[in-house]
Length: 135
Image 1 (cartoon, rainbow, N blue to C red):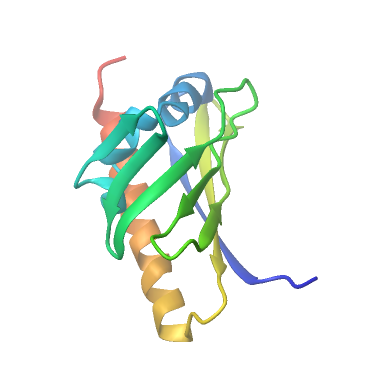
Image 2 (cartoon, rainbow, N blue to C red):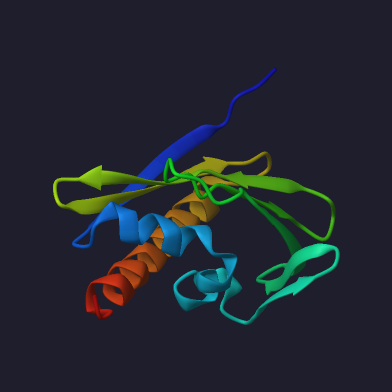
């Protein structure tokens, strides 16, 4: 059994968690803020697919739930599975979105830091999108 180095990245969003959580639970919303899926996310009989930075990927999304869990697993073209824990919790009258980034096998420090920066930019996009959306 092995564990990976991880980096947890979070952002406060001035929007009730009961609005943010259902938004994150809908896979169709990911291209609006997750730049790795911005080139298109498609649902087929076999599941969700997208063209990611490293080619065609399959994405398994957690089912919608009342706990703010929006985890997903990205399956790369070579079969590598990348588990992405994503949570929404209440933060006062707003929300906190928490993303855990794992440094997977073979990922060097530079790539790990690049990925963390990418996640931060995506979460900033999510914040802007949700805070500027009509209530």
